[in-house]
Amino acid sequence: MMIIEKKTRTYIPQDLTINWESLEPLFKELQSREINNVEELEQWLKDRSELEAALEEDFAWRYIKMSCDTANAELVKSFQYFAEEIEPKISPLANELNKKFVESPFMDDLDKEKFFVYSRAIKKALEIYREENIELFTQLQVKQQKYQSITGAMSVEINGQEYTLEQASIFIKDLNREVREHAWKTIQQRRLIDKDDLNILFDELIKMRNQVALNAGFENYRDYMFQALGRFDYSPQDCYDFANAIEKEIVPILKEQAEKRREALGLETLKPWDVEVSISGKPALKPFHNGEELIDKSIACFNAIDEKLGVKLATMKANHLFDVESRKGKAPGGYNYPLAETGAPFIFMNSANSLRDLTTMVHEGGHAIHTFLTANLELNDFKHCSSEVAELASMSMELISMDNWSVYFDNEEDLIRAKKEQLADVLKTLPWVAVIDQFQHWIYTNPEHTAADREETFKQIYNRFGAGFADWDGLEQQFGNVWQKQLHLFEVPFYYIEYAIAQLGAIAVWKNYKENPGKALDQYLAALSLGYTKPINEIYETAGIKFDFSSDYVKELANFVKDELEKLG
Image (tube, rainbow, N blue to C red):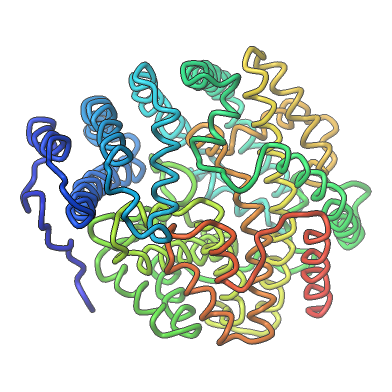
């Protein structure tokens, strides 16, 4: 199997040490270089891109290593060194380089189509840049990491054995209701121990983020982030309208399914520990037994879709670019981290041998394929896709891969169950995304709120979208604290609505795939190969779908998923 190596550098030294003493001369050279024609401008962009890619990959490894072992003080220190000593010094120089680019008389001679998205982003970055925010960004980078430290240390004891929260969640799928209830309450009780510490941390993050927005001349952090995230294609009002569409079109379908679940389980009411267990009367699906088997089966699954895709995951395995097992001290969640210079990704997740882990793997596998497909784009910034595109890559792969999930299951009955659970989850994603997105709109347009206000508002918003379709009576403390499990709120604010937008796009990709697999796969891969060299709507069009989250489109695609669910029996 191919051993991945970093691309040969043409501008920066092959053995560049990442410290300010070695970096400053490179930034200064870029800043002072004379540019006499459009060819020299393009070379300057390539040289800048090479430096940025090296820095991105260095930071990536610091973050990856830290999240794999949050209790390791040296790894935390290494991450903090970059955040505190490198990034603050780069920021003003990067702003000067942005100015140099837009002020160049040769900028207009660049290929307008090729550089449109890039130029637009540079101009927006210049517009919202403020020197007084550099120190705040540094503090935020370090403070956000505390969420990983707090949650990575969480574990519970069940039946005399210690489990991470991810591992313990498998008991919530147990057929025995008492086992489920005990596990759920044990997990929630553990979360409540750190509730106040996480609330204090979140209050500090809100205060700092709000100050960033005020410094940049915005009324609130929500409006600032819409600009900072480059949301040129939709507005806050569109998000409110999308939430209304989800409430109108999706929530009734899920309410109907919850009622069927209640009847199938023979319960008077569904409690939060009743919403994950299979209504088939059979134990939770176990598509694999350990992390290595998950990786190997996923390689086989991707091979069955297209051999070129399987080879990419196999190459990652050969290069040790996976960490998938859950363990104490490991940060929660899952991610695909692109290695900008190497052109390959790293997949991180917390497997507990469940169906959810299968979907996490193929989701992150979709991101991984995206990383490989964009590896050779001319500029590093061309690979920085908007989240609406990045999540289209991952969520489409969840659905496309389903036709080959037989590699995970020994019998047809389990395979059908897995597909039904996955399609139910596809619909369940939309209301939860709406909850988190609407919650963030409220948080940052009301920055002076208290922790108690926040809890009450979360309950109201969660109730509006079905509150997981469970009865929370008698569980008010746990109910108001559900939001704390969502790491995006702490670490990547406002990165969430993209999941719902992309989920609709993924359903449309899958619909095409059901009708013509070869053509749909080609369109999907062609769209991913564009990186972020085209506006979002054009990338979606290349994928053979619409960039649309109107009520009518939500209804059309929800009905398609509902029909596919009914076909499975």
